[in-house]
Length: 232
Image (cartoon, rainbow, N blue to C red):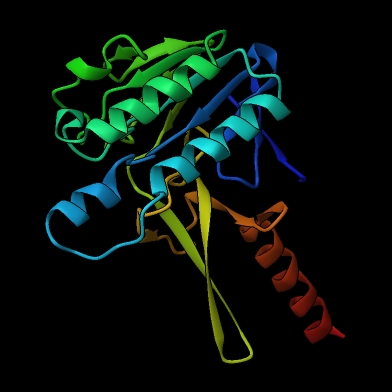
């Protein structure tokens, strides 16, 4: 797996192909929008969806925690999809998983789906969004106005579409908003996505297999090559 290095504020971050951010200076892993238990919500409503989304998401998190020797995990909101009290199996899964990572400090920013969290109160350190750490503001919602502090957020579930040969490929993506903020892709498996087009004030980094691709840098390079060919 080949991460992509990005500087935000005065901090160096690694964008991982799995859709997470690793903060080497603090041995911290950040992910957004797990929406754990979402499949169970659909099944209880009578919608036939496959089981196992929670277990798969937690297994992917465990792999990253071990691979990067993570000491702290920060969840940037919407860690669960609905009231955890309605899903005893979800609570049991999270309790068991948390015990396996007892030495890892875990902080969860409260997102709009995170409500009635008493059953999970002892598993994570729950925080409101906007707390600052290492000069970075930890949020769920990207700010809707200019802010002075560089930030990390989720909520958008950003994706990009690549086109070629009549085919279209959808990939999760990190979105850098100017030089001030970074929106993480949704880490959960049943989350959908918001397509993000190219724009002058943003940069898109696609999670493509075992690497992260700077799409807009490549487009700029291709455009410059095309202009040079036209001049010749």
